[in-house]
Image (spheres, rainbow, N blue to C red):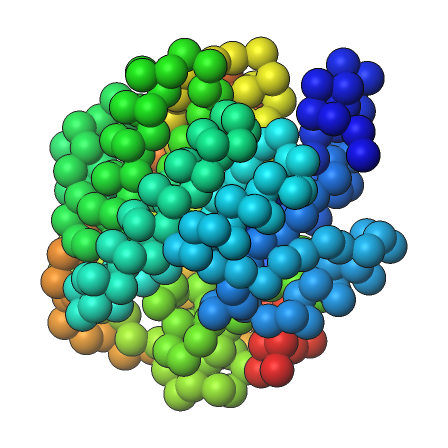
Length: 349
């Protein structure tokens, strides 16, 4: 087995431990990592993903995907797997991600997102694996005080999901402050959508989708009757909420760039991953309708508690420091998402 130090000095791409690597963003990032020469091991409990994803990643890459079924909350299993894997860096996706569900079941979110992340960092510390890319969220900004949102915007989460991400961010900053050998990149996602162009992997939500685009896609394929547009009286051009949507492949590439950045930089730094452009709910419905070449019914309903009118990113820091920029446009997001949905009308089932 090649040691960590020998692997780095030889110029061979690092071996990456990917928690939640079979999820929506995790699977697309796993694919991009392999295509960029990285060796990976996926650690996933498959609570929000399917084993079929591993098979599809193997089809796309032509390589055997190493994976371990495990829960990040199980410290001993996690630490042993990390130690035996000889990985040099970790990308941490594993966790729950529904704002609404977090309000209903906050303790589940603190357990899955905070306790699990604490376990992971402790396991990394004990195995001397001190390079981490953390999957965070724009929810840590709370209600926008200015737009576009920069990384130095005040942090103040509005719901338990956002609070869990913020707590983990603060923990990571404290860890990096206490030990200057840590290398940590925090990536704050805006609104991921789309799918791999092959249509083999994509977003497969359990139950009612929490995010707009998969809900629209399920209406387009006939699984649901209409889209509920929550609020049409916001201070926006058409009265519906405006968000920054980003293609999941662009997002995945951001993680590859973050690993490149950590090669040369210690400490803990946060980056926005978005397009810098906001689209309203009605604009998204119209764009998807065009991509799918079919009408998509919608109905206006009351505003959802806690929603803001407009939220979109300033992405200049990621462009300047990471050398990363989103390149796939709204049409591509919708075309690829529809390609996935139409080829997999019931997801991975």
